[in-house]
Image 1 (cartoon, rainbow, N blue to C red):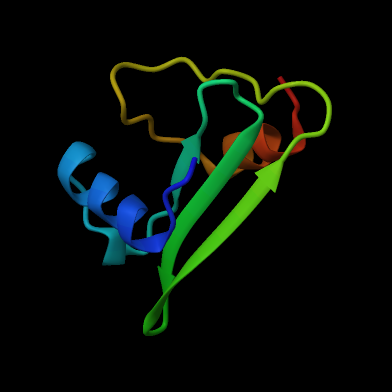
Image 2 (image 1 turned 90 degrees about the vertical axis):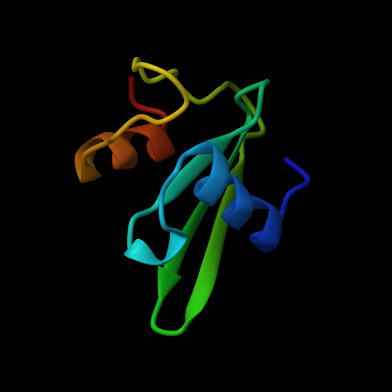
Length: 83
């Protein structure tokens, strides 16, 4: 979870094969599932939002491979810790 803007942009481009400037939100969660970063592009610049849990873990979202498409509701539940 040491990656910042540039490292996460490279991950989105090369590992997820997506355009970071597409307007999509890219969610990255660390191995311990205690920290989340969300990268997105908004009006001429990248934004990076992060959340670190003091207790508990983010719930695992089922999916195939490294790339999982979430609905807005699923993302909100993930951020709030709702299973």
